[in-house]
Image (cartoon, rainbow, N blue to C red; front, side, top):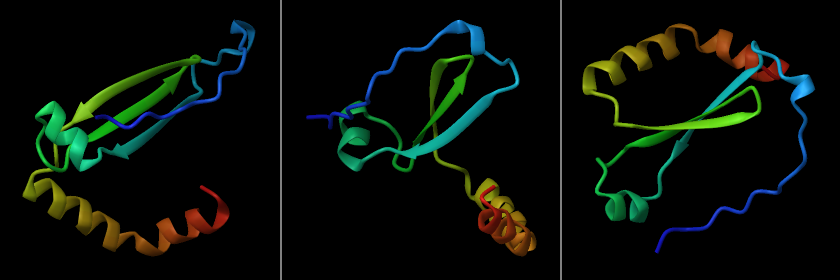
Length: 89
């Protein structure tokens, strides 16, 4: 049975919508949910909040080539990313 995620609800108004205010997260999908939905192992969910609305997409796992490129970029810029993390992104 899928796990339930409870989210606190708050009231919002449209007057503060900002077209440039976008936030996104990648979320790991638990193994039991992957099996229940018949998804590829390693799939993730991309959640995006824009203008007070949440959009979601299921992303397949990265190919080996894309994983290698991603790791190369991470290692090449590791000090920069660590500094961003230290400053709070």
